[in-house]
Every structure is written in structure tokens, then in C-alpha cells.
Image (cartoon, rainbow, N blue to C red):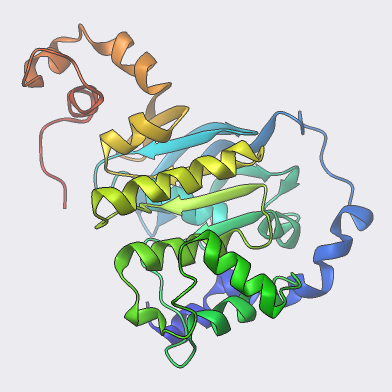
Length: 291
């Protein structure tokens, strides 16, 4: 995604409207009554088509307050299309999505104001340094951030010496930490992370896990996609496996292992005798490589 595409992306284009409405949303809009204190996100009967291709078929799941929920699946299974529908980036054919009490179709601005998004590949304005990027997005979201406030944020993400660097000059781990703090700068109820640790070394990956868990500790929710079974076991409270556009299993990581450890397909792909989440994943979705 180029810098121009990033700033004109449909998701970010509407945030300028949110600046004017963000602080008065709760006063002006009555939230839907749907177990507000329990569910941050509820997806029901979701279907997404690209022409004649059915990318998502009757998908349903919910994400609880203070929960890290993982969406797992092979390439082309429908993970990104599902996330894109939640983010409002693609139109869905049927179904409903309610985020923080707001229907994403009927109340899109309120729903978007309640979420933070970290894309799989993020790029910021090339001419801006890290400090300026933070100031830009805090202004977009209507969050006051003084010079001292910027320094505090940078210190919290171990970038206190990188304030004058361009985004392209940061390491992969540093870029991900900055992207995550920008995605959460407005304190959203739900954070959507699309393969957040891809390409990171073990130290950077662990540090990002800690920051994701800190979001959960504040009572907020996280929905992430990942191809790493280690990551799913390490940070997710519950996971859903999606394949060929359908959710085929939802459980805790350990619950998923316990439920399927004796399945013939799972036992057949086990490499060391001890059944792992990866064994279950391959047993349920097949051994064929997906493009």
C-alpha cells in the first residue's frame, strides 16, 4: 500500500469526520441493547462475495470484553475478507456485524470510532518523522498529545531515541510497535490486528505479545489473524478456524487440542506423538498447500 493509498484509504478517510463527532457519540446515540457489557463484537451470518466467488459463507462468532480472539485459517480461507467486512472496507452480502453496540451498516462512524486497526503491511507519509506521525494521527483522532506526551509514548514503546527518524528507517519490530500504538491511540474498545508479528524475530514478537496482552488487561478486546500456531496458543483466549469461507471450529487453544486429539486426520499428521494445535489445524483444514 503506497503512502497516498494509505491516507486516502476508505477506513482512514472517514476519521476526519470522526474528529468532529468522537467526543459526543455517546451523548447523541443510543447504543443497541445486546449484552453490551459482555460482547464487544458480534458477527452473525456473514457472507462476502467477490462477483461469483463466495469468499465468506455464513460466518458467525463473538469477541468478549477483555478477550484476545484469534482467527486462523489457510491462505484464501476468508480471514482477511472477514476482517475487511468488520472494518467497513468491503461490503458484505448478508449478515450483521455489531461492534461496541453499534451496527456497522446503520452506524458506521460510531462503529469505526470504537475500533483500532493495524494492517498487515503499514506505510506512513515518507516525509514525516516518527514524532510527526504520532502528532498527525493523534490530531486525526482528536486526542490531545503534547510534546511531552509524545516523548512519553515513545518511551513506552522503546522508541525514545527514534523520534526524528523516518518510518522506513525503523526496524521491523520498531515499525510494528509504532503501528500498534497509533492503532490504539484513541483507546478503542476493539483492536483488529492482521498478522501483527509476521517477519519479526523472537524478541520483537514476544515484546509485541506483551503489548497485545496489555490491551486485554485494560478490559478491551483484540481480534487478530495469524498463521503462527505458537502465537495463537501463547496469547489467544479463544480461536476460530476458518476454511473455505466457513468457521469450522471455535474453542480455546487447549480445548481445540483436547477435542480433536483422537481424530484420525489429526493423529495421522502428528510428527512427534504429542498432539499440537498445528496438528489439529492441519488435520481439520488438510495438508494441501494454499496459494
